[in-house]
Image (cartoon, rainbow, N blue to C red; front, side):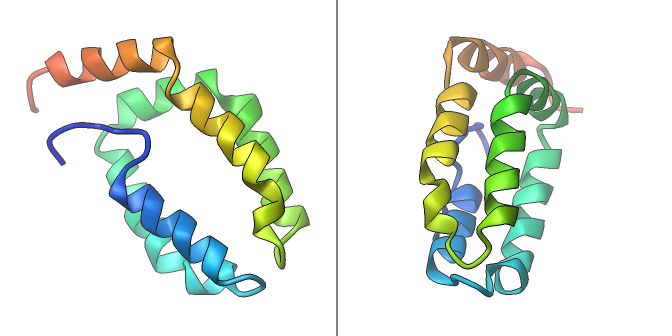
Length: 104
């Protein structure tokens, strides 16, 4: 992973799994969720900043998914709002700042 993109391949695979496994996505998509978390942890400073800034959108999306386990597609609007937050101007600044830091 040479650069961070909020819409990463890991996120795309996880979202596709959730969309394709209505009713069973909590179990069926767990390995992909683990991969997504591993990817995110490699950008922990950036992820923490985005998690802090986008907490309301994250919370709303998670609540929606838990309330609609058999119909995750009903949460598309919440996911789009979360995507808008993570891709905003401040997020772009954080990405640029993260990319300028030397590898540890």
